[in-house]
Image (cartoon, rainbow, N blue to C red; front, side, top):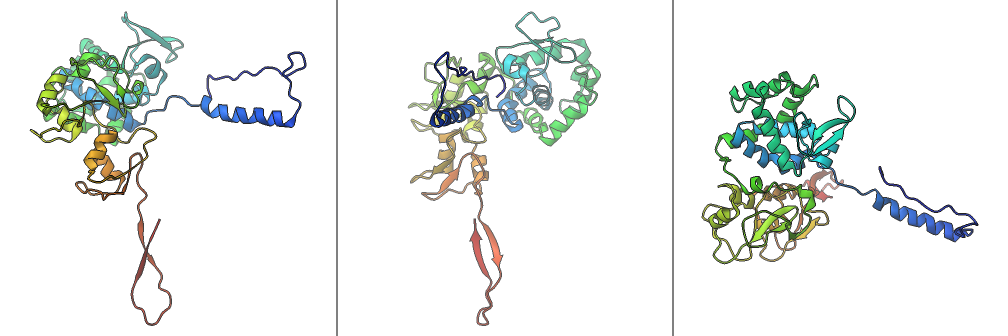
Length: 367
């Protein structure tokens, strides 16, 4: 319970707060036991998967805009910010460990190579990503990196170390390992194949805050979209509700999204007709549902796609967690796991009981 103190009055006869009975002492102990778990609750740490999911689109957009491989941007963000959990990231939205240098904006101080060093502070992670691009594209020592092939993440990693981005001797090796273990090069391929076209998107315009600020199904505060309709939040994802006359293309233009974003986020086909009241997400769905949504019991007529949209969970993840083949649909009453992998029944061969009249193998399912 770092940083949390619980002060209790000193029990003595002068302030008349002393407790002489055993029952009173037991009551106090129970109160403390109930309080301490609550006091210990803090910000949930992001996993590496969570970080990649949250910032991969932004890294790809910056690759399309300025030419820094998305894999390198993500790997640096992961390494420098400890998956978004470092002090600099949580308090100053600084995901790349960039120090003040000639910075005139907000600042945060933190012990690094030396004590109490000055680092740049931002209003949002988006601003940190933008400044990272600005930092690398405007300093001559990094100019040679932009002559490398756009998918040469190894060359970029070694070049960043050689140019002095970080002092750690294994910095290049660490970046390469993060990229290859997590297959971050796949995002470079998406950009090079035209998945991201570099136009100005809604995220780029609004400098959005950390997703952790928006929990549950609420209206998104200060969403920044140029629209009069309500922009809501479910599972930390912004979404709208389809109105009569809406089409995927009309929504895409209204919300200023990339050409393929709406289709990818909502598993839609080109020219697909939308139904009034349908949920349309404006950001990628998550790998699991929000806390408290553990299991969904399938209602009559519900499909896996419906469940994916209700909870804001990636459709392929729902299939994976529930051991279903993609395209298969669950029966009414089936329990669909939303946050963890469903325990799969295992077919086990059981020894035959001695019975001279039976030659069959016997199986049973075990939980």
